[in-house]
Image 1 (tube, rainbow, N blue to C red):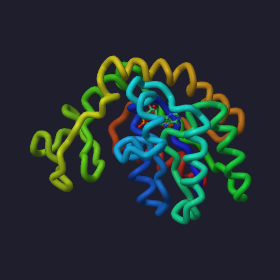
Image 2 (cartoon, rainbow, N blue to C red; image 1 turned 120 degrees about the horizontal axis):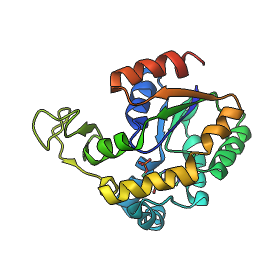
Image 3 (cartoon, helix red, strand yellow; image 1 turned 90 degrees about the vertical axis):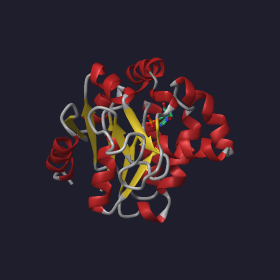
Image 4 (cartoon, rainbow, N blue to C red; image 1 turned 120 degrees about the vertical axis):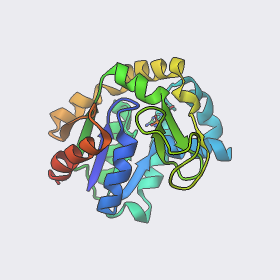
Length: 216
Ligand code: AMP
């Protein structure tokens, strides 16, 4: 099962990718997570990516494409993967098709997480993440039992720098300018499944199971 989760930031792609990848025993590949780790470790890639990420812009295609090609070549992707946050441009989508073709694989389907802008802003500005285990919370919709602490591991919860109001607006602008065309790109190829991502996380999981997973 080789799948892409497409949609604006804050649509819940990461949350759903974790659940479905676990259920199916396949890899969850989040380009945002890989890049944040590279920034935290201060690697070459991280140093090049940081300024783009801080401003809500996209990291250049060549860097991200090479990073994803390397990640998809690892053993844990052999049984399948969910790509979360990639591709984000037509050039990335074309590069992905070539990368997969070289290893005799192809994309099975694309789940398009549809949600409106106001909900994106509401979700992202309240999002909190555990520094230790990466679990996601929301100050209003999914608060932790103890404010600031992860229910699962007790780790500290933090707000991503790019989840602040000004940067969220810029990320949405970038989404419409660079990424939204991928909906028709994959639609034309008969790969697209639309998911109503405005629903609660458990309802969205159900929809993904019924549509994206059943199609495989
Ligand atoms: P995300 O966690 O998916 O919202 O990604 C956070 C940030 O990482 C984005 O705002 C971009 O700066 C960068 N990023 C993640 N994935 C990509 C990608 N496929 N292409 C370019 N930049 C990316």
